[in-house]
Amino acid sequence: MLRITSATLYTCSQRVKLLLPPSASTSTDTSPSKRVENQRTVDSLYELSVDIRKVRKFRGWVLSECSAYVSETADLLRDMGADTTAITHILETHPEAILCRPEDVATQRDLWLSVCPSKRQLMNIIEKFPASFFTLTHHGNQRANIVYLQNLRLSKRIISKLMASAPQSFSQPVERNQEVIHTLREIYLDLGGEERNLRVWLQKLLSQNPYILLRPAEAWRDSLGFLREEGFTTEELLSLVSSLRASIAELKPEDMQRAMDYIEAALCCSKDELKQVVIRCPAVLYYSLPTLLGRFQGLMDAGVTMDQVKESPNVLELTTQIVLYRIQKLASYGYDIRSGSLAVIVGTKKDFEASYGKLQLRQQRPLFNPVAPLKSAED
Image (cartoon, rainbow, N blue to C red; front, side, top):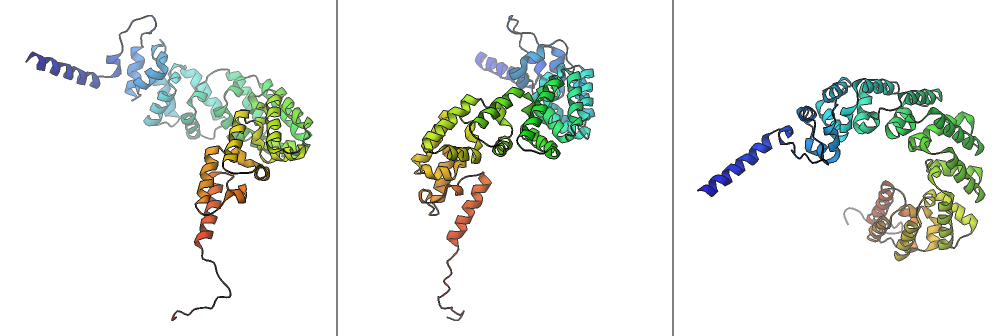
């Protein structure tokens, strides 16, 4: 009888624990390594339906801060059009937001609204990039960088995308961004670009790679200087810069040299042939040697020849797993990749499905024999 009573009491106590708010189940561990949680913060987040366990697991230190502005942050988000679900999601994803002073958040809101058409659109950005919006540092630098990019006549959409994806570029002094933009302008004009097309080209680069402004100007000069020494013309260099989405500034000359040396040896090609491979598949410049080795080995294991790779070098953009899957898919419809072209398997998934669909239709469609006698419906 005593055993049954004890078990029942234990079960009931567990149920009561589940029904209590997180504040009632806060750990009482007072060891020096575990800070005491701010009960008011925990309760305020609980009232907003925030998953306290999730916050405690990934950002537990936030709950121990003495100063927190949970209701004030929620009110500011609500004023920008956020509903309860959005507020809960933002505070779960980036709980550090509750540590920002309301006046700082209001200043940040006004800054971002200068490049966002409406509060609703700003709210959409905050939902996707809460950490970027709640990085409340260097408001002076942010304001100066926004004005500078606006003076370049860049669209608000591009500027807001930069602020969301690469907020660090707006926290740094405006002089740093001016130097990078000036270098890009020099490169574009030096490579044969026209001043009247500069803004469009620059917007395209920034939209494709928001981290451009974080790359030192010297990195651009070093990478392009190396490729120029390798014999690439100004037109080819401009094409490479555009194709690589400005990632060329992230490449070190020694890494590009190793990749080109390996490809030249693997394909047994001349310098001119190597240039064509790089132009048609610029991605090979930033693949590591183990990656290139694995992809070449996968192609050879599938029966592909090096001559075929020369003809369609962009096959190297695909992982070995994707290449093998596509080859097997085509083989099921009688297409032997070893005697055909690799062009049918390269490209995006959508490109391949289009090529694969054509082969499928070709197999299903009966051949028409123009000299065969016609049969009437009565025959």
